[in-house]
Image (cartoon, rainbow, N blue to C red; front, side, top):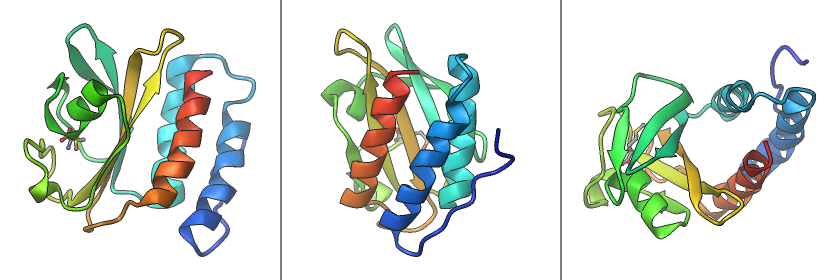
Amino acid sequence: MAESVIISGITKKEKYESLLPQIKALIEGERDFIANLSNIMSALKFGMNFFWVGVYFVKETELVLGPFQGPVACTRIALGKGVCGTAWKEKRTIVVEDVDQFPGHIACSSLSKSEIVLPAFDKNGNVMLVLDIDSDQLATFDQTDSIYLEQLMRLIEKL
Ligand code: SME
């Protein structure tokens, strides 16, 4: 297994195209779900230099914090609450350019300024977890992030 991810490329697109094959290689040969998710969070955080990267698992009526990299975070989020709970309820990717403009945004860290949340689905089409990525800059995430991170979600669904 590689000791660390090495990102080549200047543009965001190039960085994702460098990162995703390394993530695939990283999880190859390991079948433990939490171990793989943990390494994916680290590869994303340090590969893309994000402020906070983590997953929340759907557990009954709430989202519960799972593997993450970054400052400590809220542990439970209800359906429909915050960006994460909204992505779960609406079963779709949500990009927030300015968290202060998102009604009900849950501020785990006051340093977080923009974020993207993407759902992963189980075999029945139910959301099983959401991936949350936070930035300490405004408007960090756009369609390029959605496209590549949605590819990552499809990979996570197969773990
Ligand atoms: N901001 C998220 C909560 C999770 S933390 O940012 C890690 C939200 O509004 O759902």
